Amino acid sequence: MNNVSGSFYKYLRVSKNLTQSEVSRFTGIKQSNIAKLENDYVRVLSDISLGLLKYYGVDASDIEGILNSDKYKEFTLKSECESVSKKLKENIESMTCDFEINKLNLLKAYIDILKNM
Image (cartoon, rainbow, N blue to C red; front, side, top):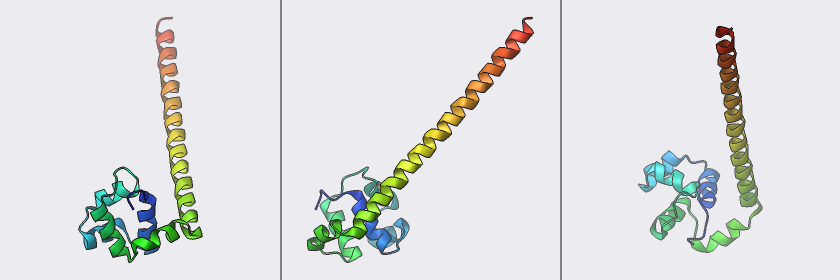
């Protein structure tokens, strides 16, 4: 059960139309820890895992079936695409910012040249 990724728990939460805050409120697990868990920043401890599975109404014997379901595969593919899209957007914004900084530096150099003429 500990080899289940965070996206599995996110899938269960989203499929129940719950927010991280709602899960936190009803399970006693901090919202920030739920976010870390769902994004694979921390490993899931078995007592937390069992608590979440119980809250989501999932028996441990159901995990393999859920992991092999088309809905879960579609969910993880969509999540991965969103993650890649977000990273690309951040990179493009960073490149744009770098480009603007380079333009400013060129303008400053040009002004310095003009001052020295």
